[in-house]
Every structure is written in structure tokens, then in C-alpha cells.
Image 1 (cartoon, rainbow, N blue to C red):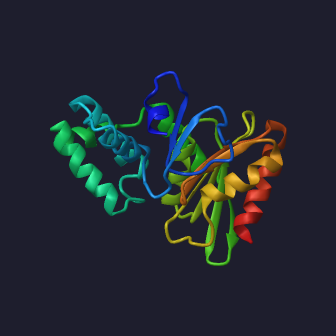
Image 2: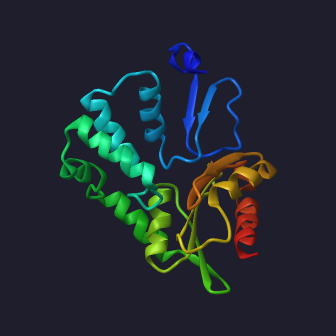
Length: 220
């Protein structure tokens, strides 16, 4: 597989979580023990006996932090990779922080505030499930709902058939990524993600039906 991965003519899929779309025409490199795709790419460099240059190492470093949600889903290997990438990139943490914590523009702020304003909620035992219909900034919209008190949040784009879900780490009953991976096919789509965040694209005509299914999945 190493020769296939290094062949520039091949389509390569690198991921750290499984997905319902199996990418049959690609050389697939999936390692679910990793918390970011950047960690897998760093390992591929090592297996090839190479080191990323400073710019590449800096970009991989940003990727690790962003993909692990600011280390919220990190493990020991993640921090080892971050230490190595800081050394290879000669970067300062303030540089990385400034890139990943930008000031949102007006349109983003407006969407996030409207998401919270129009959120509908369902109580499931001790948990509060919230959902809202927005066309942009879906992941951040879900995070805004979590910050406002929801334990599980959905953001839905009905026109494009896109559903995004984020849950708090204390919600252990289900995996968001697995929920989408195993059930999106029922609605003519595909999806996947992490334990705490994921998304899917379904047949736009079935978006609301799919949302109701996933709400019931979480509720049950």
C-alpha cells in the first residue's frame, strides 16, 4: 500500500473516521485511532522516511488543532504529534492561535444569533436537544446552541439536504459519526464524522424526515 500512497496518479482518501461512502475508486488510508487527518499525514511522512518542510508542518499543526476541536478530542498521540510539528515548523503558538481564532464577520454573527433565536428544543430525560434551520456556518451554529444550553444540537439546510450534529462530551449514549454513517442510506445519502460531531447529505426531499429520524434516534 505504501507504493500506492506515494503514486501521485492515484486518488487517495485519508481520514480518521469511517464514512458511509466507501470511496471504491480511491486508495483508502483510514486510522480511527487518530484524532486528526494531519496526524495520519505526519505518519505517512515518517513511513516514507521524509520530513515535512516548515510551511507544510505549520499547516499540519493547524490541522491537528482544528480537527481535534482545540484538543477536545485529543489523545496522547495527538500531543506528541503537536510537539513534533511545532519543532519542525519553528512556529510560535500565538501564530497558530491567531489563525484558528479569527474574529467572525457580520454575516456569520447574524447567522449564529438567528440560529439561537429560532432554535426548537426537545427534552430527553436530563438532556436538551436543540435544532435549527440555517444555510451556512452549520458546525458553528451547532456549537452556538451547545453554548446556549443544549446537550445535543442539529443544524439543518433543507434545500441542500445537509444535516450537522454536535453533542457535548458528557453525552455518552451514542456516536454522532456512527449515527450518520449507519443510517443516512435510508434517506438516499451518506455521512459520518467523529464521536461528538458529524454531518450528512441526504435527498433534499427527505431532509425533514431524516431529521425527525435522527431526533428520535437521540431521544431513544
